[in-house]
Image 1: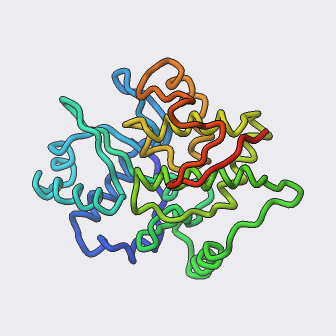
Image 2: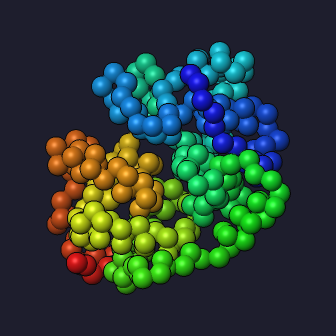
Length: 258
């Protein structure tokens, strides 16, 4: 394995930084996670995930199996990592991998505040600029304004994501709504279609921890829709989540858009 990862100084403020084994395991997961989608023995191994086992991690890191188990338990408790165990291996998923290894190198509001880490090792001045950026809501692009229905769809999505990840931090909703706008205008998808595919992913045992933002939904939309239509995973129909005119008390609502 070759290449490099991005690591930000804010890792120094992370709640597990003083715990050597937990820190070691998490950084090792960042190093091991796939930077692009792939397949392994017929299974989808998406960006931010990797195949391993407790025994293998123990051998690679020099920690006991119990230390590895305890570290993983801590990382799962603070919403850093998820695992899906099979008969001979485990799929490890770094939650919000794109927040750590994204293309822009900026912090995102999708991370828990205490755990926010950007993805580029910048100097102190740039770090201060990042803080200022994160405290200011994103502006709508000039001449490219998202609609009220784009925002309503975002407001409907957020509680569903929080049902999967209770510690999920409130995102930059303007940025999310703008991504929905792009899905409508550039990808030619309407709100109902977007909601159908998101709802399916949000209930699927594998995808629900990987599709936690409109950007990720847009990136994986074609693959998700193909799996949904092929009957793999959980089957979700229009009738059982009312995507055409959603008005759930615990998740807001949106009217059918364009």
